[in-house]
Structures are given as structure tokens and as C-alpha cells.
Length: 85
Image (spheres, rainbow, N blue to C red):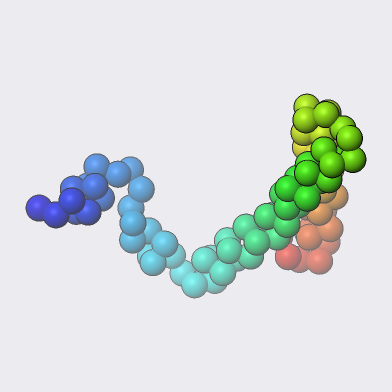
């Protein structure tokens, strides 16, 4: 028995699960993931900028996390309003 076959037997996730879903479900899932990744990019832009501006690491991390959370809170209703989520 091949290693990949043994691994798929033990794994709780079916590797063919994605191929069994109808294409509209897969498309919608990928779109939702795409739109929700955008606010997380704010963390990676804000954190180094705040550190560069002289903030300490922990205050920068807290502020960048707060900005990211605010972006999620603002983006979700906006996406729902336009029917994207």
C-alpha cells in the first residue's frame, strides 16, 4: 500500500471532498475566502509601519490587530450589502 493511500485512510479529511462539491459551492467558498483575506493584509502592512514610526512591538501588534478587527467588522456588512458574501 502506498504512503499516500495509507495517509488518506488515516486522515479525517477526504482528499476528494472538494471535487465532490458542486461548482457553484466551490466558487462561492473561494470568493468568500478571497474577500476575507483582504482585511488580514492590513495587519501585515500596519505592523511594520507602526514599528518603523517608533512604536514598540507590543503596542504596534495591538494597534495593528485592532485595525484588522475593525476592517473585518466594516467589510462584512459592506460585502453583504453588495451580495458578495
